[in-house]
Image (tube, rainbow, N blue to C red):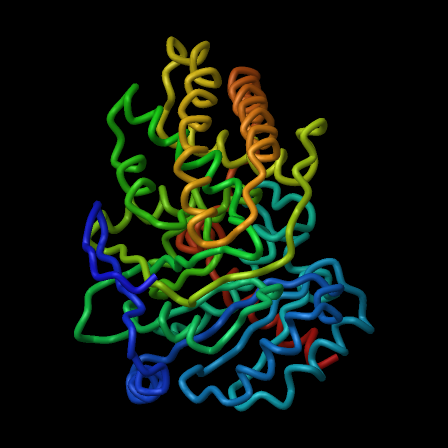
Length: 395
């Protein structure tokens, strides 16, 4: 998306025509000598056999600017853990597989006193654990995070995320990725058909710096971002599909908009798709929409007096967007199924109602504490987690 417009609350770093990714990578090699960088990838064991992960490893095999690559492997047994370590071993940087179910790490987590309930397995908990490992020892300047199922992966993605928070000539603490998501049709339904119209409606009801930030971001639900280690220590980590919105809210509180930028990281982004699950708010995109909406409404302290009208006003705003999306799709030779778009909007209106009901009943899963807070509660706990990760890898 190679324009050059600077609009909204945060700086946009464009992927301009003619830019050379290899030059950026060479600059990062020089920067990394003074400011070490790490890549964190949360993954499930099944993703090692997916189409995307082998290509991700192939791309990283020629990477010189990363000091460490950490894969946090959730819901895995010993054989899967050992296999993951062998897959990462040929990479040129230091590699670590964090195994949340490993015997040493499990013991450290189970014996922690003074922490809130860490809950069961899940991406949020896994990311929190891996961040603790990476933050031990104050050895890193910045950390990049992305998923293990990116089908259009290139090493340009982490380089474009890390450059803004690592280059000493700049002063950003957090960089959010953005991209187009297109196959034979427009993808990204939760961003297009839930978040964008919901934010427009909410901004008519109340003023909020978080709403201004989200409206400025081209892909607020992108799971690809980078941040300084200093900032990473300060952030509580949400556990559910509200992870991205919850993180944005925390980052905004810590840095303000001047510390945040967004970076165009690729021409097109593809990963595995989830079903809409229109009849079940506990599955698929329906569940994601419930948790995203609930996190957003909670973060902006949405007033009770507006709750009765929200889902109806959302649906009206979202339906108005169909004309725009249809024009964009048809002008680019894409399929545009109005019926399926309307079904998604109807589903997401129900998701909003469910999220409001959850808020009213006090049904919420709190975030995991920041690592600064964790260390204050249990001095030495960060190092204990790191030592357990090393012991599990050595056993």
